[in-house]
Length: 162
Image 1 (cartoon, rainbow, N blue to C red):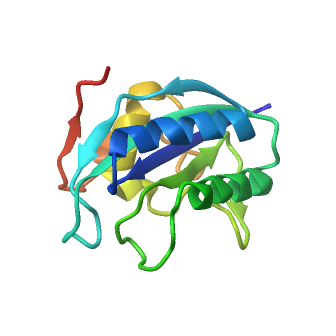
Image 2 (spheres, one colour):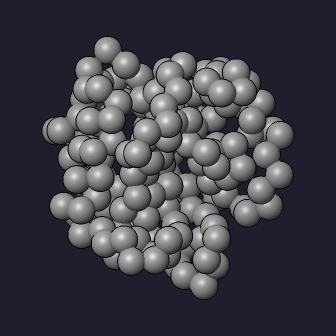
């Protein structure tokens, strides 16, 4: 059994409903969600002229091989209506593997740890809520330390969740 650290997010449609739907699909197809962060709202990163994103970090317990897991997550995105027309553009749902335990992957379908995770406050803030003492496998730094060192200026706002 592996622990996969995921980030889900989106900025189109009913953002909260889309996150909840993604969680249901992930549990049905991929494993058990052991922890989920609060939902956070952040301005778009990269292409700024688009609606704000909702993001949530998840810890997934799974026995699925990492490359297969990534394919299943891409399939969930597609089934929820995601189309990849513009890199960093608006999207209904985005499901990223931030990392899986202490494993490193550099394949056609999976690059883990996520190459820009340490530069993005919107990923680190929710992840630090549920896994502050877990170490990122490339730098071996705790998530809380990476968040403290992050220079990303975008504000990350924790929402009042139900």
